[in-house]
Image 1: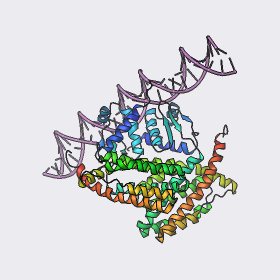
Image 2 (image 1 turned 45 degrees about the vertical axis):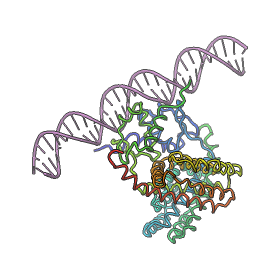
Image 3 (image 1 turned 135 degrees about the horizontal axis):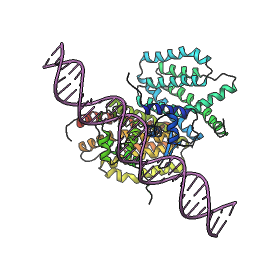
Image 4 (image 1 turned 45 degrees about the horizontal axis):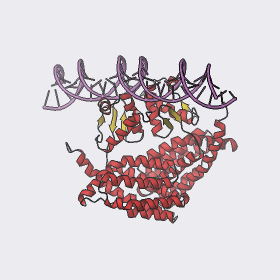
Length: 230
Length: 230
DNA sequence: TTTGGCTAAATTGTATTCAATTCCGAATTC
DNA sequence: GAATTCGGAATTGAATACAATTTAGCCAAA
């Protein structure tokens, strides 16, 4: 009956979730004592987890002043998306040259199996999870664990903006958020055909389209965030 | 007379330097008590610094077993270089479309001013610092701080391999390590001409050439590392 | 009212302490 | 002789305690 997961892991995961749920407002100072009480751990493991999050870019830190939620600006989100373009396009390129046929086929399969769920899903979190899962699997095809790691980090930081974006779309489009599965399929087809240019181009335009939506969403997020209690 | 730098910062920097100097052998377990004594700090700030390094990919961590130096394998180095290609090519692309003419000119200037030093330098650390500085400045031209951040992290982890590589070259080539300043110039010229394809292609081939050398160097590093005392 | 500085409270920084777990070697068994 | 188990030593995990620093409120003076 071994305890597999340490306290700091638990705290770390909780913090990431809190960050994604807007528990911290951008630029807000984080009170260690209060937070440690909420999370049921002492300040020691809490600070270790916070340091990890700083290194990963989720939070910032100032000497003798403590930890802060990272400020949220359109240009920050823009940067994250541009970094995603860099990482994912190269991943697609590498996948074209070295992924095994069967692994590519498996990804195409996954896309097909997911399609019904994709079309019917209305929950933004669910949609987002599926979308991220696709991109993560594609990065896996590159066989490069650094690219996977960086992408995972970027997605973690983009996530809450995307959630806002998806919710906004759902509300405007009457309960239906757009799962752009055709763009995904186009990318996989490019890779399956070992057509590097086609795959990379499809990937680039896919992410850049999302970027436009997301930077717009940030502006709206701003206003939502600074409404007193909501 | 304020103390500007915290202990954990100092410890963190010391650890990064130690990692670059082979103070830890790949896969070696890190003893917290012993290390904290060496660094003149208690385990609390040490562990905070170690957690940062884990999040940055310099070290690994296992529950209840502690921190380990990251294993060093050819495929790991390969991954890092491929990630660099992704980041730096995109940075070059962005620089082409949005860098100010004067900033590009400033980088070209920097290259010219550095050339004599570049040609005369024999100290691998000095050469490496100049090379990294160039790449960092180029990334700055992209205006994207995430790309800069990721590149900085990758370079930090690649650094000690490159040092081995440069030392090996120096020893073989009779005291002269090759500063490939012409490749750098070619990249800058591509950007100055706003010729995206030329700049990106030059960047890609520049890094990939380095990658070949470095993965070779890893194999040699292996053998050097496991010689008893050296 | 505003500014400056002083004090007290709050908060962060780090050492220390002790509990929990893993590690390692010696004794035991097969 | 090899594998196994057991117990103590070493190491990590986390809470607590206290020092250092920052923050906030207050009062006085301009």
